[in-house]
Image (cartoon, rainbow, N blue to C red; front, side, top):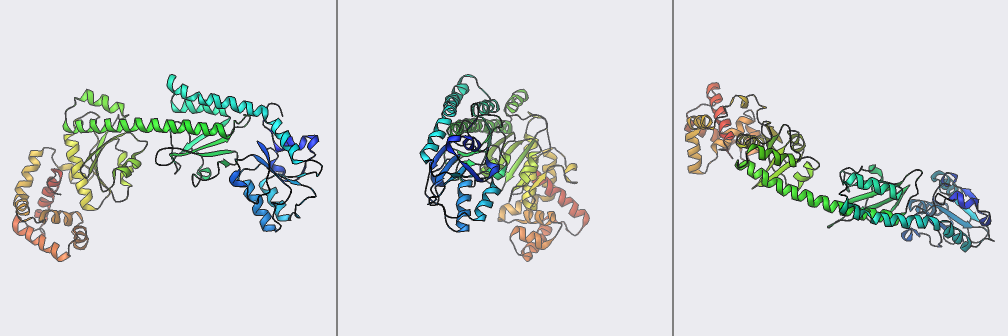
Length: 483
């Protein structure tokens, strides 16, 4: 067996052991890390995987269902083979047991009465001694990964490629939900992700280990044995999981620092205290380049928004109940998919440009989204908005001319005539739907519409008056004059 790991087939070839294969031919290439005697019906809590279990038969149930369950438990725990002592306490083996072993490729061996179990254990120990030296060397080199991080400034992808070469495993990393955990490291097939951190570490062809982090595991490390390599064993994979945990902590710290810097940059951009060149440099540091848009998001928590925006470049700033997000216009589609969200997005602009107009557009759009019950409104997508002037003075003059008296009435009486008219108009004059959105009775809404017409002197059944009021309502919303 020089130059490769010990397998079940190797053990069958040792003349002194006189082992005989009863079934499970497909599993002859399974590796064997240890040979252990157990007469427990369920020894799996004390196993690491790749062991050969030897029993005189006391552990083997007598019923067909019990034998099958016993074999399946061992196989699921990663046991390499089951060795049964001939002519001792082994009950008759049912066909179901033998068929299950054959289907799963679980080798079942017969040990002659003349061969003591200790002889098999000694042969296995001697055979894996060389492999143990290789594993120790791999462990020491994996410890060296910490030195690589400190002295060579390796990126994550390069670091884990080195660890793969040293360990003999293909490494996969993921969050508990199967998303990428570290940049540059691929994710595993979702089928192999453990259901819990308490799951056994052994999986077919390798190991699955949690990546520790404060507050609970950050995710899982999946290690598959590479064809033609010499896998270094569970201890080395555990060390790699520790390196992954360190990388996750560093990545999270860097991300949090960038997030704080991004919030400061966005605040300065909104205050218009950065010149365009400095603004562009700041945005480039956060990988924001090309066409950019400003979003104002309501109705969701910051944690939910961060999860939604993960792996995308953006700046985020909280202002009261609003979350300001600066990034690619493509962020709009991701945000729109969040439950309960109301978001408004400005027209695209060049990175580093002043945000006065974009802020006004995004605030109008989010107000329109909240009032209309839509998850996302993009400023300029509607037929009316594109004809509205950008000049705030012109918009304010329109509002004052058409809505000045009703705005004063609402302020003086604490009433909501203008928001009620807006909700009714935005829902295409559907009284029941608008009343439900305002949480009032339809009769209450009808009264507000009549009172609005009396104060403004504009009959909303007239097309001309309706068009004038609609444009003024849009202008008021664009100026942030309607809540």
